Image (tube, rainbow, N blue to C red):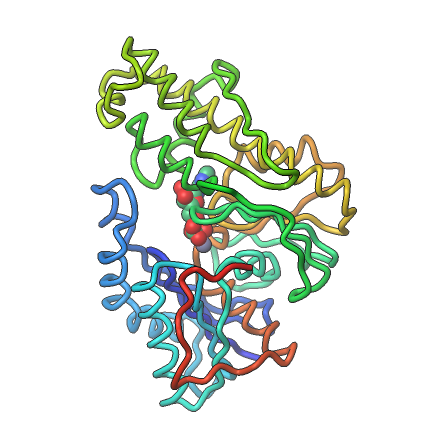
Length: 352
Ligand code: KG4
Ligand code: ZN
């Protein structure tokens, strides 16, 4: 089954064709990231407008890369939530139009579950991808860590899962982005913090980990702790404006803050993932979402987990159409309801 996956929930316009949920024959992503850098975060209206410009060229490029045409497509899968309303609308309206004009069934896909499905893509002839050798076995434990989500989910099968816990405030990726802003590192903060951390001492500052429900997370206190420490380092108190702090931190202070924050933020999610692993005893453990490309996360998992964990390519950790196509396939195979192309609506606040 050849599935065309369309993703537009945030700042990436992603389109991909995946065969049987497993073999990626094309994957094209256009990002409006550069347009948001100046503002230090995604501006929803700018992102939505960029999707309008990009979506048709990205679809055309995905067909070209796959050397396929519409006659080869069996199913369209599209992200309908969670995400930014204006952004989701572009993908959903495009998919609806194509489903009607090309007479294809359409499946509405949950973006967050889609991230987990990225781990089921194990084959491609496209160059530049390092994929897992085999699909993960169920039951599986998933740690979903992105700019919008931090969740631990126990999957008995693709669609029989239990949400064990989630963040009560900021997502971990959001915390990386906000901390980067405080210390004056460019957006997106995840890769910037990871790079700055390479020059810093991860044990220089011992930020306190939030005490939450067993599998829940909180990152807003950690972000505030970074701000307070930064104000202290430049000899100011808590009233000093956060946007003026970074100019007065030197590069070694920034690197130490980045490394210490990263260590503690990552330890927080690994601690709970390990706790859940021990309690539920899944066959496999996967990580998903933009923060899953973080090398400190992979390092801590490698040193602390009792099983070998496979990771997907960083390009499939951040938002892409392939993960949506993959989950769309599993929905089609599980006889999910086909969405009505005349009425399918977006669900910005969709949860697992
Ligand atoms: O999954 P994603 O592309 O979008 C959402 O669904 O949110 O994740 C984006 C998030 C951003 O917060 C970004 O800073 C973070 O993933 N990120 C990273 C890394 N690469 C991206 N965080 C830590 N380390 C990285 N290497
Ligand atoms: Zn995402």
